[in-house]
Image (cartoon, rainbow, N blue to C red):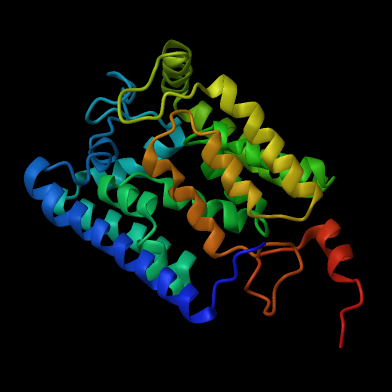
Length: 292
């Protein structure tokens, strides 16, 4: 016999969960920071990036930078700012991403523990969530995903499964264009990046990354996004991207913040800005007669 939960009790459970999540976020930034001083840990890598030799050190070390040279090139001008100005600007960008993704439910999104963890460390998973949402309408946004964490680009299988070739070609073409231009400008950095990738392949990430190897997660991520594409479930794209992260950090699941901006199914929207793009396949779904 199914368990029926009243609307009043459901709201109480939701509000209680949000309150607990917000308390956890406050604990991170107030108590944990005062004891460990580890807030903005990942921002250090973006601030200290050395455009001449960006790939020194080991994965997980303080200040280790692992993204492709175009990202280092984009960050380099801002590394001359004072540290506190850089951190303030970076957190403004991240909280802006939360506000855009969450909209009226921004407090609920802040209460999602991976979001709080990712904000605490200052990583880019929330920006990846934004890029994925934008990527449905502007496929070139996938360049950011491919040039940072790389493997979450498995989400591009959405276009393959739905035979949306134009969107796929735009996403890959934009990435290739960025790579080609920057390789001419900084070939040594590109070679250093590839060497770093090969050297770190198979290296277990340090704690607190979950000890689930990428070779196991990547096929699972591909299956998730393929299923989602065939069944018009756009939320499967950020889920597959999170599963395909090179290292499965708890904060990496902040990519799921894209769920707050995406509908459960293609066609389940009521305003033009509720879903970035429906594409050819989705247009056929939405064209079906709707009940009066």
